Length: 560
Image 1 (cartoon, one colour):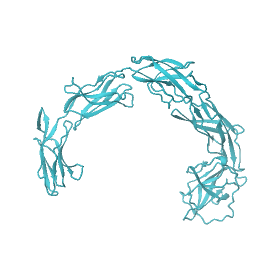
Image 2: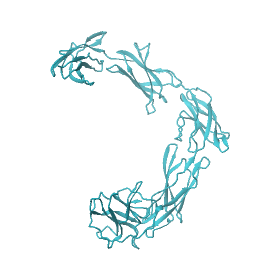
Image 3: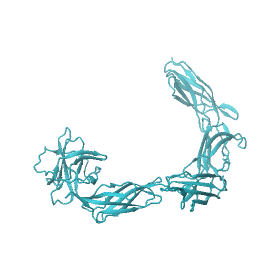
């Protein structure tokens, strides 16, 4: 259906064309006085492929009438008129459709003619919309039929021919005849196979009988197939696209065996792969000749014709056998299978493995400990194919020997091909040497990061007391005490530190800060509290980058 306003509507297939009947001419038709219609009531006027008009208007309308006008000038002649409209809602098609195509007076030129709509909604007056849209009084050319000569393709039959016929509806006669020779028909489809969706557009032309054809040799099933007339003449509107049955592919079943000539090779060397492929035929399993066998470090992805991690490949001989070298650049599984194709069924690959220990480096290693004793090590395992490698965070008192395991972890691929990131977190010591270590495996040699000494100064509250643990409601009290830090093997006064008095009501689990301050040169502090309600009071240290966090004991205050 050809949209004639901002609203998007869709028409019905020309297969339901009905013979057009002459509408009742407007002369002599009496209707109630009409008022200018709100623009929002009517959201579109369209012409179906069979020439009927469709008005997008509320389904609750009590009365709808359309007038086809000779022009958009005031007082223009009414060429055809009817109020025989029926509400229709099928899928995305909805609106008030005329029972038949408007038949304009004999001799009326083809073209677009203004349509005026008179209607009444529940509770409203009769409204008239003069600029609602236009009626497409034109030839309507569309594809009447189209089909492939095969229901599907297979490994041995990869070509199909699509044939069809285009016809033209003439609103002056109500008949359909073969489309003009040279009418352009666009065949639209999607190559839908192996996980790739490729839209394709191909244009063919009709002959004198309106017939057309297209020879297709697709590399994947053709889905979403449709045929539609394009680039019509000025006096012609195209019909909606005709949907065509999809062209599928019946896949051939195969099986494969393979073995590796070695289990371990040096970096850059090749391992010999030999095997045999067979296909299932009507006579049973037969040698599969002329196909490409591939070996890959990745498992086969039957949703893609691209083989990831390709190590080597070769053609199968007449007896289905193959042999070739597969270059091993790292420790990996070796999957051997036929190169994926839309004509082959998914099949298990022949699986082996080869070990090639590789060198690597730890780069960008950063190890730190926060104020709460949480040790964190980050960095990169610089090597290809390094995801999920096991690493260990270790600690030593002197940075030379006695390394103890603190935390195990694995590397994660960072997405840019330059290596694998890692993050290890655990509890740390006040002061110690740390490093990240990797033990040798079939994939990588062993290695460690440079030892790093990391630590903070320990702190503690030597004392904490509240001047009055039974204050009156809202009465103030003093929270005081002293703070120390561990320096040169001794606990010493910690002056100039930021401390905060916090409070947790008995009825809650939430802590609230009440007062902030600093310790004096002797590590002493004094902060003011208030008897809000019963609850616990604590003083905490706001640590800097060099000190550990500390908090005092809890003191319970019972408000009178």
